[in-house]
Length: 396
Image (cartoon, rainbow, N blue to C red; front, side, top):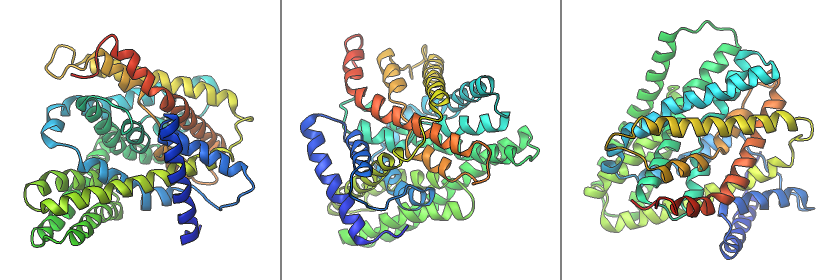
């Protein structure tokens, strides 16, 4: 699809209008965008839009990840690292097993296909989660837990997706090979991110021109992602590593005070643009799915996904109930209901081979889960937060 200036201007105009209306109606911005995308697809207006894996991974995901990671304080992240890693690794496996086992038993799918669907839906999506929580007043610790988990668990899913596709292709997999692939992909991505960030921070230290500093951070965001993907590492972990390094090391001298203000404003705008395009396109794509044909499996998978998320949060957080990293019950409820799925799941699903068995059904089911996640969970997360805060304040 050709992205010309007219299409970009139309999208930004719609996003700006939706943003104003959503604020007045006290509706989450991302929910308003999805509804606007649905309305746009059903209207006589024809703007040829398509949500593709290439668009999400190449253009939209790097700025969203970088902007989120840029604001992560390393000291706070390090304090809760054990909880975050448990949710982003063990939690992903718990959710995956629940979804895959349920699909295999209910629909009699081949185990490899059930595993694939479980992988697609087992991780919360950073795009959807960050968009919702930016508009919801929560404690800094809860925001960190939600943001960091949703950002890091993609590294787990990226590896598991490759493993699932290999299983479908009939390759022989061993536990040693799986672990090696995981470590190789994750560490490789982090090394690429660290190298890219180190380079741009070194260059930024020799200038106080805000425009040049913005340019260098843009190179860090996209360059780290592309470098890692080129070597088949995790581009997401690369960009996250670069964002954390630039945000924390840059604040102690590599980026000037004036430049930091400009960098923050620039990346907030980039996040707004990327979020707007993603959620509008999700709304457009929802109208093109054959939900009528697959309503029952879609409903069952929504229930399985919700169950898997509940087990993930309450079991993983339960491990830390007697430790200094204890997560309050109200925070656990918020983590459970705030575990949204979004563009990441859709991008991976849309990139499946065209000859894959059940491909259309898988894509439709993933869209159904994402629609429920954004429209139902996303629109109710604020009242849920208020409700749980009555029994235990979310402010610690």
